[in-house]
Length: 240
Image 1 (cartoon, one colour):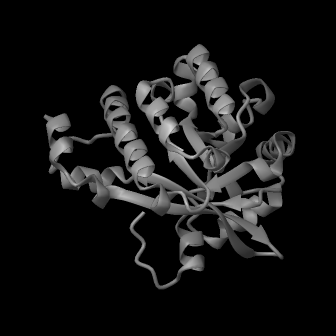
Image 2 (cartoon, helix red, strand yellow; image 1 turned 90 degrees about the horizontal axis):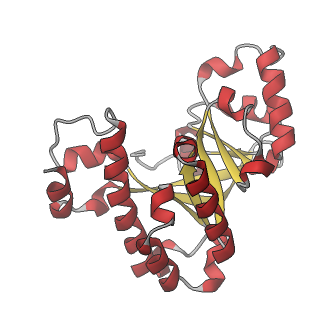
């Protein structure tokens, strides 16, 4: 039922873009790349579903694999629109290993591939580590970069960039993180940032200036969220 609804829905209405920015000259924001993704809540309204699409992890995974194909097809067919500047795309490990990704790869100009980042959820990585490593190696061989998405402040301190071989990582901001910058947890987090490489970490879901202050205190210089959206374009209607 959901699959047939998806086939009949205008998914372009749920397609979103959100910039990842670097802080330069203090707190000035400079766009670095743009994430292209499907807004799940808007998608739910489009297909008039009473089902919480994120409540069942297997349903959600099945759904996102279908959406992966749509996003890849849309970007490859309209590369002049979507690939004018560096972008990131959320993909499942299985998608990177699928024929639909190879079709996408064959349609994208070789000169653009180094400016395309594949975002893979950390939960997907640990479902099948062997599959992730194969997907990572394939992506790198073809010229893409890998971003590990969905990291909490706890899980971030427990991963090693060199062993997993990712290029970027997304750390999720929440207001409780800043409670005490001198705390043992925040000190461990700062050490993990330095070990990973401060220019490789994106603090995402930033909803206030506190997030940027906190990230800078840890050495992070890349940010994404509604707060940075508003700084870059204060007159835009935020729909992410």
